[in-house]
Length: 151
Image (cartoon, rainbow, N blue to C red; front, side, top):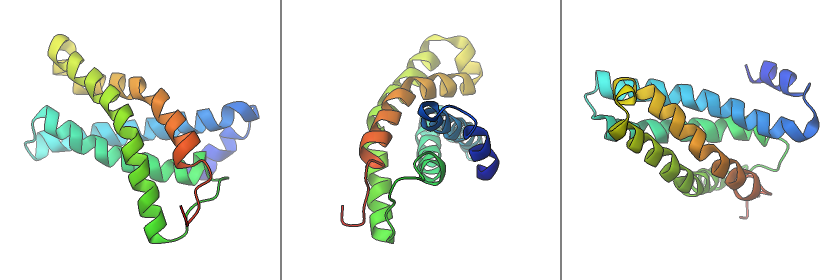
């Protein structure tokens, strides 16, 4: 799937390729987020708030993997398990700000928009869009900037 996506992205002008790749990985993360939230709330009995925390962590991990493999594949990547763990933790730590924007949007909509309360995926989608800008800047400049094993 990543090969097909890479072929499609290669047809875009260079300056747009990284942003488009980040967006595509984000959409895949959104699908993971929604599916995990649905499983957490409907199969495992989580309330919508706790389920959202779990779904975000699962989705953030999947987007870290996708961005390593596609969006920032041309940049040096850590090769040891310890260095990859540090990169993953840095990704999660910096995305905590994006998460605050994301979760805040979700919570506000869940509390004040009845349609979102009835259809949680709408709140997830709105939150994802709200946090995406910060997350791209953090990933581009910090997490995948020039990551090496000695960092």
